[in-house]
Amino acid sequence: MIYGIGAGVLWALETVLLSYVLSTGTFIESKQAIFLAPFVSAFLNDALSSVWLLIFRKTNRQYRNTSVLETLKKKNGKILILSGLFGGPLGMSAYLLSIKYIGASYTAVISALYPAIGSIIAWILLKEKLSKKQLVGVCLCVFGSIGMAGIPKEDGASINYFIFAFACALFWGLEAVTSSYAMKKGEVSFETALQIRQGTSILCYVVLFLPLLHAWGFTLQVLTQKYILLLLLTAFLETGSYLLYYKAISVTGAAKAMSLNITYIVWSVLLCIILFREMPQGYEIISIGILLIGVLFVAQNGKVNKTV
Image (cartoon, rainbow, N blue to C red; front, side, top):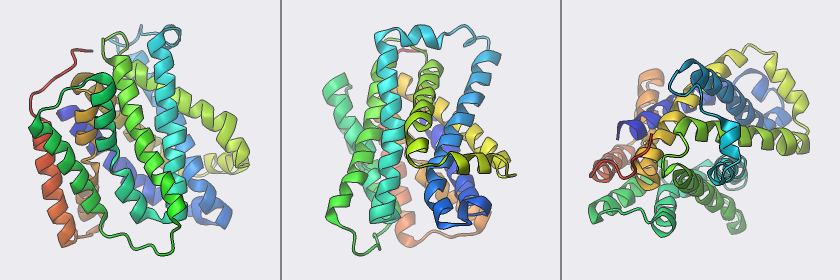
């Protein structure tokens, strides 16, 4: 339980800091900068996170001798490449396109369905067993997450563009399920799985997304700004969050890990109260209660996978 919730806490802190970075300086000085900011920041965050992760692996005796290249030669390594594609470029691109075309509120509501979608996939493909109480918990986590987004306010959004938000939820659910499958028998450690995930994401941005968006010039511009120091910090937090998330997946399975990780919405609200004195609305307080009850239900019965 502690791994999934810890991942949510760190992700919330990273999200708050990254939101601040994207609202200042180079990232808002032109329409092109505003458009490219999410893609470039996502690439830099994953790239810097990969460096932090490499330092973690090489300075930790327990993980120093694990080989990413050897893992990539195996079936599980190829599955983790697929997981990286789902969670990084595909999931994040769908998320950003959804925000662009239907707005942040609708996107937050629909993408919050990923634990439910992932749990169904894990139940079908991985035969992960959940008790009735845990299934209720998953549903409560989803309802609480949707409630936290509030009532969408964007008008005029074409129904056709909602496919991006549903695609995001699907890809994020698939990321957790495929990585859980690859780590299920303990043949791949969680930190090696994450290194492959981050490497796959970076490669896709370098080879495909940044060239197509003509974003290399803007990327180099960001690298020369003082905000790169804040990005180093957000990447550090992302690394910690992902390490705990992948550890949770390897220990508890995809369904429980996703439901615990999504508590980042609660921690984000609490951080905004502490840092910005932004008090939550009534519906947000109710939603927090629903989500926390769901987490307690999901956390029943401890471990399901005996790995790392």
